[in-house]
Image (cartoon, rainbow, N blue to C red; front, side, top):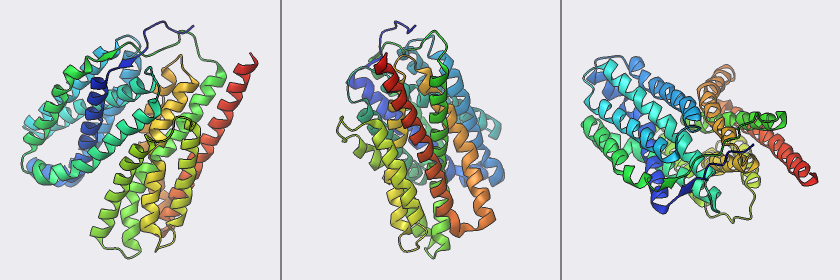
Length: 385
């Protein structure tokens, strides 16, 4: 039996707020790396210990996702967003004022919890909202996250390394500033009261595997691309610039996906993206083609995450828990798969980086093809009934 809660409705102001939140999340997620050396000096700790900030953030994010999966079933969408934004802002204030390393880590953990809650909440609210064009809107909003990720290192290099409190104080101000706009969110996410049938659970499981592998492509390419480009003769600055280009391509690709005609099925967009990414990464084995191939891979994978969420949401319209499970799967994939990629590369050599990344993309494509076949059978069964 499907819950009778009012369907989520988002005003233009609310969508603007969600876009600002995505941009802010991109800034915060990308700021840690450029800050590590500064943190090491400020708190008189080793660079390895400073790297614990990343672990604290993503541990908090995983907690935020898991708690939010339950919280969204019992509170209104507006109340949830107000709480998550307040938590993110509180963590930013804590980071800006932290007098010691333990206090800094605690504040980063709080940011992570708010980050995870907002990552789940913002994507879910748009994916399950009323009205047409959800796929385009979610791609554009996730594009804002990508642009934030590009802006984060720039803000750190110009402001953050000398005025950390100003950087995080500004982030807290943004979080507080969008709170009034969140009032434009109404309704609740749909949840079914009965246990999902085995076929639906299997479909969700396949999507979880695909999303974990997708994150492996994204983080694995962004992480190993610079080393591979340097190994084939590019200078460090050129390799770093091209890596920024990969992330920029990811952001631009999501914006472009927002212009795809509504008649293009979500599964077509996702399958084509994964296939092109697998081919582009394999092409990067050619030294001359590698720089362009990596950028093409970034454009190709851009719509997979947001469009995949909407695809599954349309396949399971009465239960938002299905799409909720994609988020812990993505975070686990981000924690495990890049390390596995690194182990394979260490065994066979850095020159095989594109081949390893291409195989991960092929695995993602295979999982998505299984999901497409399963969803097709499900639709056919529904018509027969």
